[in-house]
Length: 137
Image 1 (cartoon, rainbow, N blue to C red):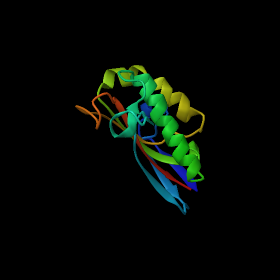
Image 2 (image 1 turned 180 degrees about the vertical axis):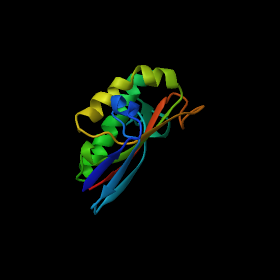
Image 3 (image 1 turned 90 degrees about the vertical axis):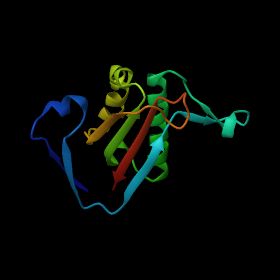
């Protein structure tokens, strides 16, 4: 798979993000549903409990760990990620903890384009972060 970074301006590079990317030669494309900080808990509502309620940093770590697990199951790595979409209920807290993502993706040596959106709430009111990913190989 060949990747070409497109950056008419370069400010995004400091955030491990390209403005756009042209990708050629991939054979498999994966769209990952939004990942949140949930763990199985048979005593919780719907059998799921929120990891790190009220903690953007902890929830970002958990959501990224879920993406790692999905990538591994698909036979991919972080280097295969083409795009990420972040949803948060507190954009200031997310940006204050952006190093969690930056360090995570920095290990892959890529800068996938991304979108960051603040929303009023997620499916569970204790959730603060949801992350979608697209990957290819």
